Image (cartoon, rainbow, N blue to C red):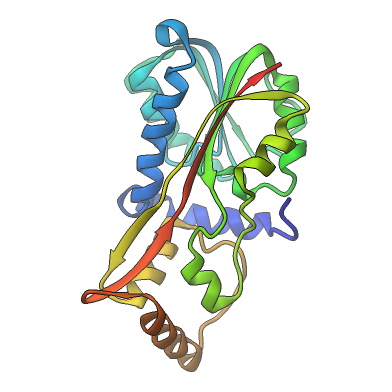
Amino acid sequence: MQQGIDKQLVRERFAKALGSYREHAVVQLEMAMVLADMICATAPGRSFGRVLEVGAGTGALTAALLERCRVETYIANDLVAESRGYIAFETLRHRPLHFDFLPGDIENLEELPGGLDLVASNATVQWLSDLEGFFRKMSRCLKPGGILAFSTFSPLNMREIASIEHTGLCYPALEDIAALAGGCFELLASKEEQRRIAFDSPGEVLRHIRKTGVNGLVRRSWTKGSYLRFLHAYREAYSCGEGVYLTYRPLYCCFRMQ
C-alpha cells in the first residue's frame, strides 16, 4: 500500500510528459508488448468481448493488445483526461466495435463498467494508494473467470535514484501482490525482469525521468548546490563505461477471477 501519493501531482507530471512519453519510456513500451503476449496466452482464439484498460496513457498497451487480440468493446481509463486522443487514435486504427474513455482516478471512480472479460494495466498500479482495494474493485467488474493482468515493478526498481534522494515508490514483491489478490483471484502466470539503461550523464537520467512523467512523487525545486551534489553522488556510485546507468525491474502478473 502506498502512503501519501499526491494524485494531482501525478496527473500534472504525466500530462506534461504525454508528448514525450513514447520517445523516452523505452522500458514501459517493451513492458506493454510482453504483457500483451502474456494476456493473449490466456485467451483461446485471442478474443475478448469487453476490455477495460487502467492507466492507458499514450496507448502503448492499447496498441499492443489490439494488434494481437480481437476486442468487441474497449474501455480505457486514465488519470490524465488528455490521453483520450491517444487511445482513440489506436482504437480507430484497430477498430474494436465500441470505444469509451473514463477519465479520472480509478480508485475514486464510482461508476465502472461490468461484465468485463479483461482488465489490463501497464506500468500503472504502483501509483495506486490501495492495491488490495483495487483488486476488490476490479473483481466486481469482471465476469467469473475473467482476467486481470498488469505490469508494474518489483522492489529495488530505480534504486539508484532512491539511494541518493531517499524517496521512491513502494514496490511490493510478487508474493505480497499475490497475497493481496488472493481473496478474489488465482495467479496464472508471472514474470520478473531486470533492464539496465545507460545514459551519458546523471543529468540525462533526470531528463529521462522528467520526460516519462515518473517524477510525480514529490514536489521539489533543485538549487545549484543540490543539483551538483546529486550529479556527483550518482556518478560516483553508478558509473558504467563513459556514462552512468539506471535499473528498471519490470514485474508481470496475470490473475483469473475465482
